[in-house]
Image 1: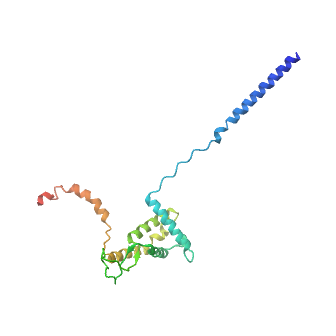
Image 2: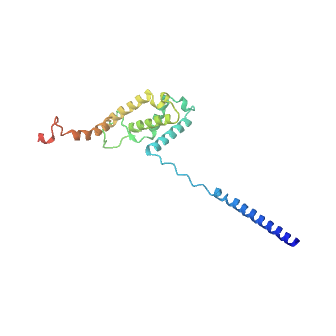
Image 3: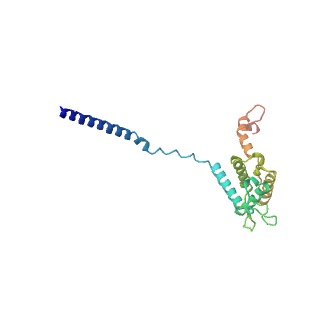
Amino acid sequence: MLAMESASAVNSYTSASTTTTSTSDNHHHLHYPLLEPAPPSPPPPALSRYESQKRRDWNTFGQYLKNHRPPLTLSRCSGAHILEFLRYLDQFGKTKVHTSCCPFFGHPQPPAPCPCPLRQAWGSLDALIGRLRAAFEENGGHPETNPFGTRAVRLYLREVRDSQAKARGIAYEKKKRKKSAMAPLKKHQRHAPDEPTDHSAS
């Protein structure tokens, strides 16, 4: 009788031990999925050419402020400081701007080299100011305090445009895009009853 009770106790202990082990194993296996690495997040969308250039321009201007003497913060930046920045960029220009005493003044295609200085082209400066003006507001600046949109900056760009047009013998046409946009409309209207056709003149 005692032997049967001992055997029963052993079986009960073995069964309980097996159940505990099985439960422990199941509980241990439940944690395995948590140890798996999370899937990599998708890469951010690539910036457009305009956005990339705008970011580079903004970083360049920020570096200019850091190197400015005396030190200059963005909140204290005025239109006069923007003009200093634009003149500073002239040393990196690649556009030949003839002086008034140069024999090639006003010639769009000079036949020989000359010692006239290189400057930033008006179109490059105009596009740069547009990007920096947008970047200023995107980085928390207010439109009414935007130093890139001041009257002094607009007048400077107009002066650069006019002086370079005379020195290089070229003309900047503001409405060139609008005229090209109207061309398809005129093409469709050329056979209208109130307009003569090309064949009638021949």
